[in-house]
Length: 563
Image (cartoon, rainbow, N blue to C red; front, side, top):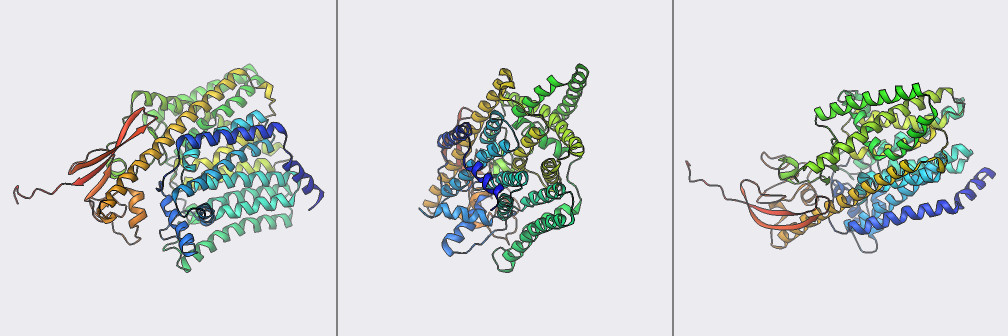
């Protein structure tokens, strides 16, 4: 370890007291939120039943297997989850806490990442808290989905890679790369980080031949790791099917951009989620430019807002429009036949909720305009700066990631990766801001947004967990009465956990999730052809009401009329 490495680690291990206080604030808020929402409950959420099966295989057989195909690589996360199951055995509660731990690491890592790119403490704390209260991030942290572990390791990877390149520290670069390789074994899209780093490294070393070769080796090794891992899974019988190929998607060029709407929608989401930080930099920028430039900027923003907002309203695509996790009533998905397939018995979309999402979308549209502005500004600055590598690293990561998800189906949870990157982009595309230069009005706006998103996120996460907890109570009661899973349509997670079969053939008139017989059905309301057996009440904090989960039994068909 050279002198630079030693000094780097001394700095890293002795943060200033103010930074320690801020990190403790992040930890405290995260802990309180976890306690309030109550993540306890031995039940899967969304796709994490697939990943739970892999953990169960490790614990029971000592061997990693994916009985059901998964799009994510998962390998490292499965062993991480198994570690949390060791004290008391397998449970989804233990798996949830494994993700919550990584979620907290990701939030504190965001603070460190922003400090590393020279953001002041107030902006760094604000950025970390915006991650903490983000409904997608915190909601998914209360599951065993791969999104939060992927984001947490991505943040740490960028942190160490940036530190290493800034300080010429081989140790930290290697540590950052190791985290990327581990991350590839969670989600293969971590290869984006390798590609962006390879480009930045080549730029920093002024495209010298030996460094170009090193960049190629770094990137190609990540690609080979993913390919060999998938081949290993399939050839050893650890999975019945090779997961969707990242590069086949990227090379197909049958772009599913929906005329570019995906990029704009993603920017609307991100623009809303990090609007307080955007506002801080934009207000400072307005103070620095001439009156004529202000007029042009405000006119351009107003025109963009009218066109974009009008288009979203016309197409009925105001937030939340992308789907999967963030819903108008809180968090989802509600994977039951009535709510997911038939689109009935969904919570009422009240006028109050419509107004809330209209305002959220409006803030997001303004944020999207400014994100586009700062993207263009950073690209222009990159050509004129002598030290381009940091801009290249962040810009390439953002643009490559947007492209990859433009060629396949995007979910709202896929936007999470971009949140800290756009925060970094805002910091590096602007001059340093002193904490005292952040005005009271902007501070009040930032605190208000954190409070609103925090309240929404806590209530929505509580409701989603309470709904699932109640659903599984109903299912467990049904099975205790002697009804086997083969006779139940209990929703995607239930039937996937008990009945998943790669050879299953979809049956007409039945849910696609491995339903054999639907004599009994779990639903959010009454359905034609079924009679109510029992209803289980639970409280929805966000909607301020009591709701119910229904157990239904199929009525005997009337064969006396005309037969």
